[in-house]
View (spheres, rainbow, N blue to C red):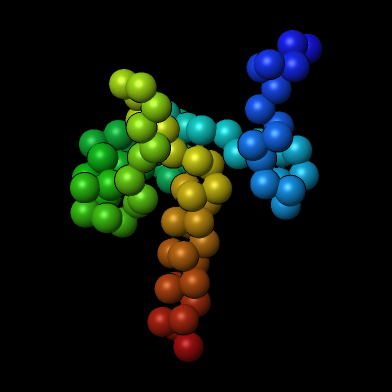
Length: 81
């Protein structure tokens, strides 16, 4: 491996060397089991975090998409009590 291309030094120590995969809008909408237009609407409404912009692309860390699911579960569990 070329040491000049090693980005592990930029990872927080808590990451333990694991990398949070970046998802496209299609991949993120599939994680949320919704259509692409619904996903984009949720982003515009602030229900899903805004994407990271890398060059001309938009990407969502998978952890943030999973956090949306966990937040929905928390709201569901809290409202049924």
